[in-house]
Image (cartoon, rainbow, N blue to C red; front, side, top):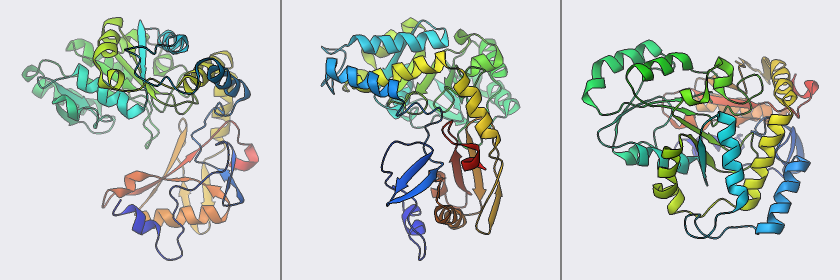
Length: 367
């Protein structure tokens, strides 16, 4: 924050953060009374604001109200909650699923409950969730499986478990892990594999089901699936899917379940309907990829950059935050809204700009 706000508010710069959008996050957005082409919506498949999703949320309000008012463990289980969990378990072809009120709560509660001081967690995605567990932790060079093999060779015998944690779509680099290699490594050492699907559900695989569909693997090849509802699923919160025994342990012990209010019924119903649309309208996924293919090179003002488009996000790397903010300001003047990434808070690291394509964009808006 000590870097972000002062840099954003330099003379002649408008602060690009916390801009108020007056309506549904879609292809265009109204900000301060002006219309912008919106490349910061995260609404990839256009399901947030979809009439059927809105209707499902309204019906849930009429039936259950706007809140469950307490945690699910005691008195407030609702049928729609189990329907969503069963649908997500079916999506991943695993035994069960449970969801939490936020993605952060999902990672923190799950890592803290499943891993302990005798474990060493190998990851290049999850960090905050591992800290409360007391586990040793170590990252490996991004998507470098040979480096991961070397780490295992050096430390595996020293720990009870060495879980591998990876993202199925990395939100900055826009690349995906070599899941078959990670699976082979975890099977050889009889360890766990956790895959974070927060940015990839609806994006990876021919029909957008998950990274296992992309590689032709079984959902059970991954021990712990983690994901969020906030993007493709048009809701809020996160989920864990896998073996029933693991899910039951979380259901009765995870702080994000037993010490937290349950998910609001309209949000659950919205995500359930969004998932149904994803599964019944796979053409949305192919249409999204077509839209993304249009967005390869851009120019705002005198700042030229190449965009690396793989699945859903296209990062622009700038030498420093000030340069990144100049591009954002040029984009704003051209009535384009993009995202200046929070990773720019790291001193000496490049700033990141991200452009979120949506099926709602027209070819003309993207080009």
